[in-house]
Image (cartoon, rainbow, N blue to C red; front, top):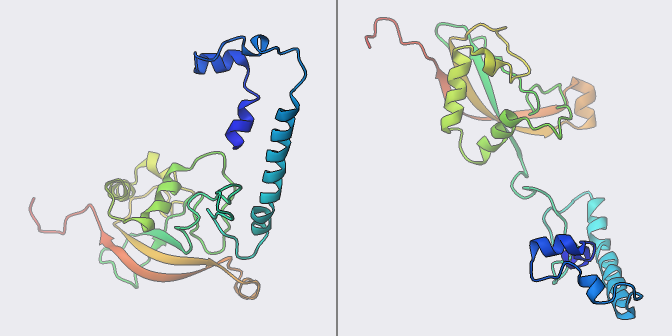
Length: 229
């Protein structure tokens, strides 16, 4: 319905260029100098009033504490609530990449976390506003827990970190090794949620995260000593 109403604002030459069957001087041929027909005013006003009434429920949903995403509020599928991927990210799962300089890495090693520009990482930091600029690396990182971390591009990314590739490191907000190459990297999956006011006052942390599992354990480009190619 919105498309039909909006089409009234399209000029005859534009409509003719898209649909040649429509005359370029259609309005002139139909008597453009005449007053707007009463029936047309009645139809457009009725349609506008209908959309205004149907818009009440999406507007109410917008300010609800339990806001629905991609929801429909009537059988005609008009004036719906829209949200990109609103139903696939009910939980915030983040992939965290860490590196270490230790020769024999373990849980007690000095693991340092790589910081991304946009996606959550440091629990004390709120990601800044970047839109409309598109942080493609951060965007791809968001998709990993929705599918699998075992993506070809992600392994290439880890290889670049192990090689301390300068161009790759420029895509990050924080390199914990200041340009040096780590000996090992590992990948861990965390569940993130916003801290409550009480938790924030007590810890200063804006996020609370819980370790879920380690999809990629310590990995390195270096071969163990004594092993032949």
